Image (cartoon, rainbow, N blue to C red; front, top):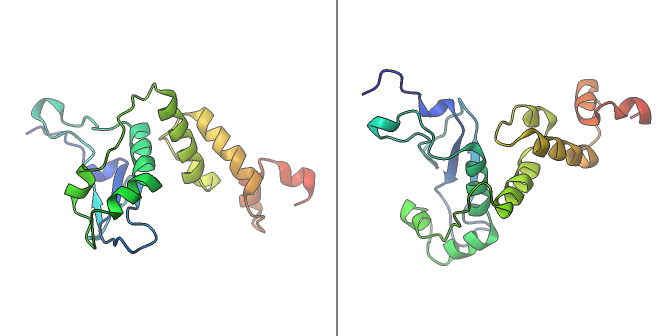
Amino acid sequence: MPKNLQPDYETYRIAIRKIASNTNERTLITTVIPPNAFAGNSLTVHFPYRNLPQHYNELVFSYTELLFLVSVMNSFVADYILRSRMTTNLNLFYLYQLPIPRLPPSDETFKSIVARAARLVCVSADLLGTFPLVDSSVKEAALAGYRLFAPKSADQKVRGLIGGGRERESGI
């Protein structure tokens, strides 16, 4: 066993809500949890590293692949399929039956889904600045979209982050 194993909690991981019901508004809810975040027993958290002797500390999925996978699993299509198969507990064998597309990161559909997911997930300027899952052009587009719809804040620092200097011009 290698001496330099990285703990799973030191990287981004997928978390899946285990307690679900086919009568809930949403049956399948997944997210990307940040490094150094821990989960209780109501979440299934995937192991991000390969467990092979020659591949320790090698991520199973890239960060963009994590975001893509979470996006597809949170889709209405995946939710509909899962809803017809389960009752109250989300076991992994239900997830293994989902028809998740396997697109390469170079695919335009893959890129489009990741870019849109980043815009939905990055809901604050602080989060966006620390979100390495997507490249800087996607971050900038997400931040520009956020600035359009962000609520006005009385906090000067928050206004500066959100407005990108607009608060001085508009007197917000």
